[in-house]
Image (tube, helix red, strand yellow):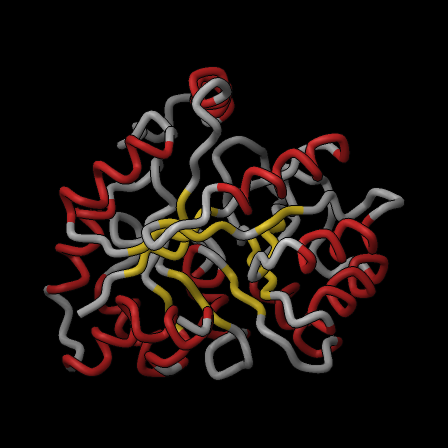
Amino acid sequence: MKIIDFHTHIFPDALAPRALAALLCNCRGGYQPVTDMTKSSLLARMDEWGIDLSVVQPVVTKPTQVKTINDWAAAIRSDRLLSFGGIYPTSDSWKSDIDMVVEKGLPGIKLHPEYQSFVLDDPAMLRVYDYALSKGLILFFHAGYDPAVKPPFRSDPKRFAHVLDAMRGGTIVAAHLGSQSMWDEVEQYLCGRDIWLDTSMGFSYYSAEQFVRIVKSHSADRILFASDSPWSCAKEELDAFSALPLSEEEKKAILGGNACRLLGL
């Protein structure tokens, strides 16, 4: 069984210590990291926990980072790591930045409404999504609660439903099972819709019963195993997942089969 962690975070070695310290400060001690956010640390944990491939989801927090982050994302690609690219969606160069991600052969872009200061279903953002999707890119979103910011949050299941209504197809992934700490609304607005959900930062928060209910309602074929490393321990997530009353076919799909299909592996 191939295991793919669809949601991880690392930084270049020289930047990782400062980035980790800043993120820990922002989340006010809400999470304890399981890696030091370097590539070697993530690979060591993957070996320890039996994870075959990790997908890195970089977050661009200012326009000047776009080229550097996408160059690095392309450079770290290997048989164990695959990185999405990034844009700053409210910058004037958003279209050429999307073209850059395509040219570098990256499979998608990570977007974070809170860290990038945009409202998920703002009409101005829809043209950005539409253009990226038209280029064959996957859109991967942070979704819901984030400990670094105060509510109201800029993304939630109802806003994702608005985006889905406006789009003309393409692949959209909402992290944290559709929106962190908003899973009743996920069941109301997103289950059965044309959207992928990852499991990251979940099994310590949602109940096993609710997770299984969402899987059955939404379809196991649209769920991706993920940890949000270093903020959640993939080993603990895997242990919790393995105990769920799902079929072996459903478990294989969620742990890696769906990601292989989505990424063309």
